[in-house]
Length: 74
Image (cartoon, rainbow, N blue to C red; front, top):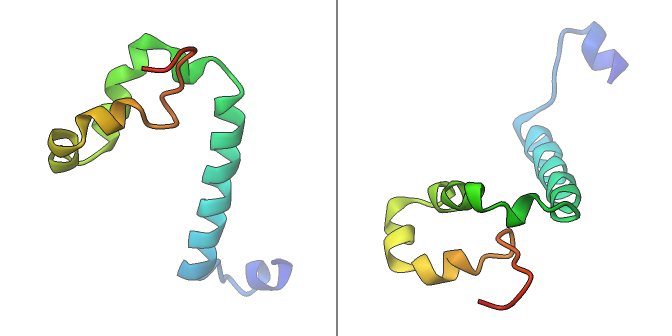
């Protein structure tokens, strides 16, 4: 990393993609340990994450998505 930095080079696109994937996994792991996924004010945020066509076709499945954890089954 130090050599790349001194040469003015950054990460390649594949390296950035892997780094982003690991960061998202870590963030999800930390987030699901909190009560944030249960916050009713964030319900629309989950739906808005998905493209319109998927929201229309799979609305029920989206409501049961693992990031929309519930204390009791839907």
